Length: 98
Image (tube, rainbow, N blue to C red):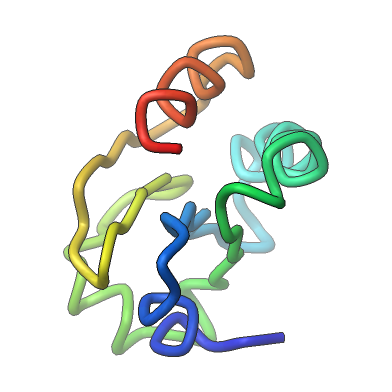
């Protein structure tokens, strides 16, 4: 799996799911993010980051609550949302960046 730094260098936008294994809402969002990756993976990179194993990245991007979903373009965060979201809402957001 590529790192966030490698994926940020890509021309494709990057969708990042900051999660924790112990987090119930994260477990709800995980299959949604998986479906989005299957559907939009050719147009957008997807990455899941366990906040407990990646505290530096969590701190760098001010992730204090999980799940936090973010989209990066050319290495810069351009969108973020916290908490459980519907797949249809996330698809609309993704479509606006691809």
